[in-house]
Image 1 (cartoon, protein in one colour):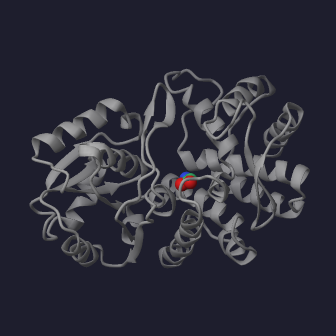
Image 2 (cartoon, rainbow, N blue to C red):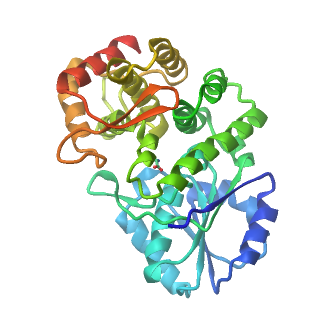
Length: 360
Ligand code: GLY
C-alpha cells in the first residue's frame, strides 16, 4: 500500500497550486463543512483549480459523519460530473477528512484525494495515515476503508482559528506520539502551556508529531501490528467518549457530564492506560503521575462513579480493536517501549478506574 506524501507548508496556496498542477484530473471537488467553508476556504479560494472546483458543503461536527451525509456527497459528485479521473480536496477537521476520504475512496470505485487539515487533531492524526470512514448504528468509524490520500498539506496558520478546547483535543494525540516516541519529545510536550499558546513552537512540534505517526504508518499501514501503538489511550478513551455521548440529550444532567471532544477522552484514556502500564508492564510511576497532573491541569476530569464501571467495561469490550471478546490494550514499558496486544482482568480495569476517579 502506497503511503501518502505529507507536506508541512507555511504557504498553503503555493503548495496546493503545485500539488494540483502535478495531479491530473478532469473535475475537482472541494469538500468542506459549514465552518471551514466560512473560515478556511477564503484562504485558498484563489488557487488555480480551486476557484472552478465544485464545492460541497456539509454540516459541521461529528453528528454529521453519517451515511446520509455521505449519500449527499456522492450525489453532488455525480451531479457535478465526477468521473474516475476526478480529484477531491478535503478542507477541514477529522470529520471532513474521514468522510471525504471515504466518499472519494468509494466513488466510481475510488478517486484520489488530497487532505488539507484545519484542526490540530486532524493535522497530527486524522488526516494522515489513510483511515477513512463514517459513524454507523451509533458506533464511531464503524464503516470505512484504509486508503491513503495522495498528499496531506499541513499549514499551521489554521491553528490560530481554533479555540482552547480544540487545541487541547489535538494536543492529546501529540502527547500520545511523545509517549510512544522518546523521552526528549515527551519532555518538550509535557512542559507546553496550552492556554497561552506559542504558535511558532507548536508548529515545530506538529512537524515532529506527524513524523512519529508517519514512521509508524509506513511500517504498518493496515494496522496488523505496530500501528496499534497509535491506539495508546484509546481503548479507555473511546469508552469515555461513548459514555459521555450518552448524556447528549439530558440537559438536566446533574452530574456535569456532557459529550466531549475526542482528544479529551484520549487524554483521560492515556492516564488510565499509563496506570495500567505501571501495574502490568513496569512503566515508571513518576512519569505516569507527571502525565496525570498535566491532564488534570489542562483537561480537568470526567466525573465518573463506581456505578459507571460496568457500562465502561461493556463499552471497552465492544471496541473494534478487540478480538474474541478480549479487551485489547496498547501499553508501555517506558517511554517509547511499546507493548501491543495486552489484556487485563476485570479487577485490574476496575483498579485503573479507581485511580482515575480518585486521582484526577
Ligand atoms: N488514529 C490512529 C491511527 O491512525 O491508526
